[in-house]
Length: 111
Image (cartoon, rainbow, N blue to C red):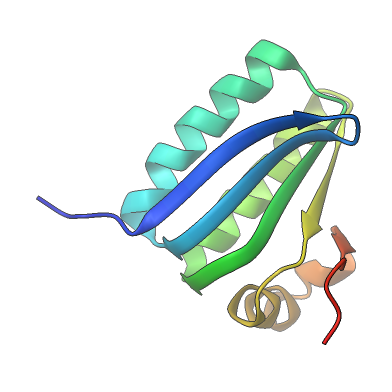
C-alpha cells in the first residue's frame, strides 16, 4: 500500500470555495484529490475556486495536471480559479510551463 503525504481541506468563504493543500502532490495523491474536489465543485457549483498551495512541499506533473484540470472545470461551469500563496516548488512548475500567465495568483504572504 502506498501512503500519501498529501492532505487537503475544504472551506467555504465569502471569496469562494477554498481548497487548502499540503504535503506532496504526486500521481497517487492527485487522483483521489481530483475526484473529491471535482465532486465538491459539481455539487456546490462555486463561482470561484481558490487553491491554497502554500504548504505544498513537492509537486510533480500530476500536481500541475490537477491545477490545470480544475482551471478547465471552473471555466466550464462559468467560474474562475485562483492559486493562493503557491510554494516555491509549485511556483517553479507554473513558471516552467507558462501556466503562471494563465491562472490568477494571489500572494498574501510576502517575505
